[in-house]
Amino acid sequence: MADIQVIIAEKTVTTVLPTDNEIKTLMSRMKTELQDDSTLDGYVKKVEIVAPRSLPVVNEANVPYIGIAPVSSPEAWKTNKKKEVIYTVEVYAVYWLQIQETAIIGGGGHTGLLDFVRDVSTVLRGNTFNDYLSKPADITVPEFTTAGYGDTIYLIVCTIVLTGSRIFEV
Image (tube, rainbow, N blue to C red; front, top):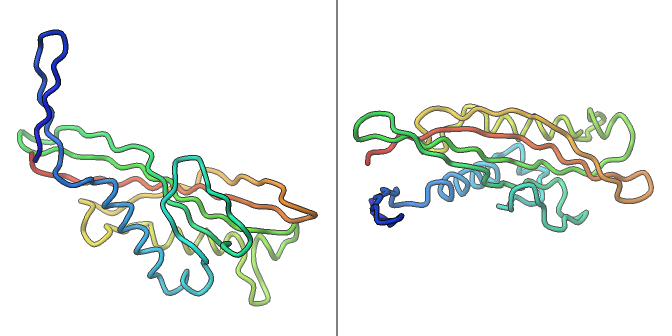
């Protein structure tokens, strides 16, 4: 553990930080799990770590696309020598679609948007990412956002929020 001393108006406060960059480790493991999943591997074009609520330029060649963004990782004391960090990470499942039913629900050998969201959620839900988390991750799918891209073609982003926690010794 590394100790950081902060002097605030003649008062010294010592904060103990974990030795590894925990949210970086979690996001790297999430990225690996999503890239290595045999179902997603069949059709997802790109998985990368991005800024929260911001996507890079996503062109047609990279869709379906998955972005992973850090949101927060507050810590709280659990016991005298243990802390718990609670991670919140947003996962952006990006898909092109035309305004038609098969683009949303799939069919005829076509993977629909809801199939894509289900496949991503299946990889994340209940995962401990190689025992990195102290208990399995929880997910929620709070919103779908659509933006026009061209004639009857739309970019739709489903934001999946993952929460998980890790207890570590201080």
